[in-house]
Image (cartoon, rainbow, N blue to C red):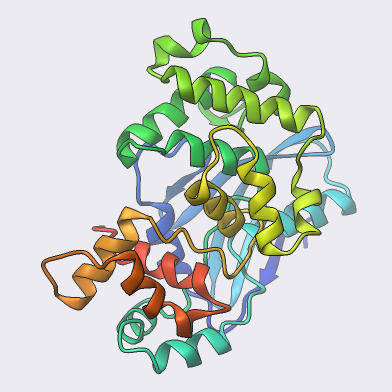
Amino acid sequence: MSNNKFYIQLPMDFSYSECLKFLCRSDLECLFSVENEQIYFPLEVEKSIFLIRLFYRPQRLWIEILKGDDLTDFGKREIKTYILDWLDIKRDLTDFNKMAKKDKLLKPLAKRYNGLRLIGIPNFLEAISWAIIGQQINLTFAYTLKKRLVENYGKVVVHEERKFYLFPKAKVIAQLTEADLRPMQFSRSKIKYLTGVAQAIVDGKISKSQLSKMPYEDAKVELIKLKGIGGWSADYVLMKCMRCLDAFPISDVGLHNAIKFQLGQKDKPTIEEIEKMALPWKGWKSYVIFYFWHSLIKK
């Protein structure tokens, strides 16, 4: 087998099709693309940028390096680690499925989306930036802003006349000004928050490795210390990047709408009602909200 083509063995309860459905939820996504059920994305490893193609064969996720320097064994492990994290492949969903089967609200979702994994954001700065960008605007405009930021300030790799982008580095975002981002329709507050978070990462005041050593509640407190990061944003980062299974952005509008639709009610549930519903979800709250979000995808 070529060193530029290798695979990850998938668990039996992994649904590539449901994961693709989530990845395809916006045509404006700029950090990866899905074509003919294959995923294309760039990844920087050991200061080299690799363009990667993922494709599925029964119980195997194949990884093909389309462009990049010679791949070392370390680089190969790093690429595998990134994909395992991104698609949450190693997660044992046995207990989640057992819990969902006993829950009237979750049972139909767990059955319909069986094998769906919580698609994450392994890049810490990207996860925080996306949480900030998405505040108080609709999803389409959030994707538009991310696309403008990435295509103007992220590294690019060209393959067969197509451009593939990496999320900008912290040191790049930290130096951006209103003059740079206001013409792209970033609000002044978002500019302040994005550059502030990036500077905190550059200065070593916060990092993924630091947070990974903390209990969920302590990590949430640390994130909320950052300007522009409230409870929802902190939980989002802890859920999508840090993989805290009890991270639960309970104020999320999408969650409220999904529960309303699932219950067939006219009114959204109150926070108190959701808190009561969530009692049996302990240990899997992040997966629960992800399945609810997935239920809102129209494609």
